[in-house]
Image (tube, rainbow, N blue to C red; front, side, top):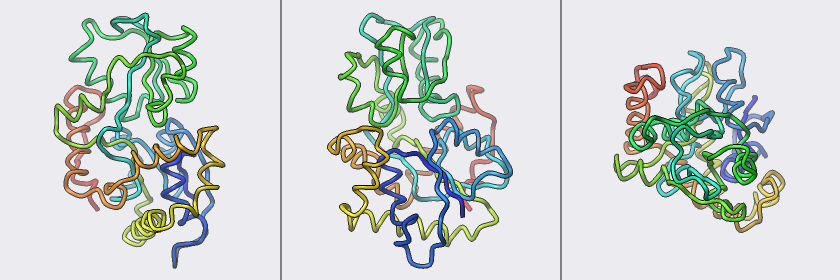
Length: 274
């Protein structure tokens, strides 16, 4: 069975047990590690992998062959994307902004925030791998950057300034968690069984946090163990085991607001529940 997720610590923590034969009854997995922009594009292809991590924001475009799973993803509070500058930009009106994907939750939150807070709108949007964004802002290649994941803990190392925390903005506006990364699977699979495997993998990781450490650090893109652990603590939570009512409400709020602004296609959100 083919599975694709990022090399980020939260994903490797969650899926370690599943892909290392530690979940009873689960098959062997062929793992591919890919940036979210790549997986968001894979999600529209009919011949894509069996299971993959994408942005919640990309759900309106996924192939009819896939559906959302209620576990394994990333939602939470206090973990939103940041808009960073090198300190010289007090406003990003008409400015060049680097983003990790145009179909990411981070980008949707950015567009919804900018519509309310950036007079005249931003200027050119440039998509680049998320690990290249902070150096680009630091070096003046772009005026601002939209960053995700561990950048929350490391942007000060690049001498950058936080213009806004989109997570705080979203939570104050909706009182809901931030829907970041979703797990989707082929509809042809036994979805209950797949979800149960992933949930068992999450629970194994929580019960045996040291077992996956070498695997996590091998893929952690030069992060320190402390930053990798902070990343896991922030993004792996009760929503990773099950979305629940608040999780689904957050996803529905994001996609319905974005559709109203014309940022994503409209879809029947109830179809996300299988």
